[in-house]
Image (cartoon, rainbow, N blue to C red):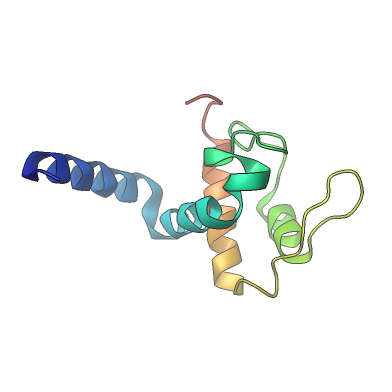
Amino acid sequence: MSGSVGATRRSRLDSERTRLGPARMAGKSRFNQTCAAYCHGYEGEGGKSPNFKGRTDLSPQDAFKVITEGRRGSDVMPPWGKNFTTEQIWELVAYLTFLGTQKPGQ
């Protein structure tokens, strides 16, 4: 990687860290590693579930509960409470809340 490409990539990452903050940035990383590929799509845009971008009907408390305990029925989600710490789940919630402020397709 050339110096200018590396510097540009670092600049974009620094800008994103500033915009998201440390908790949301950690939540984004965890989301992309564990949630995005199969179920929720890159940056929360679909996949096998509804978009998180632009979604305002999911309270932080409800998101925390669903991530921790999972969900059964037609919209199944496995529980992650034994895989993540409370802090890690709140980081995911912080990222989902941020996605709710974004326009779909943005």
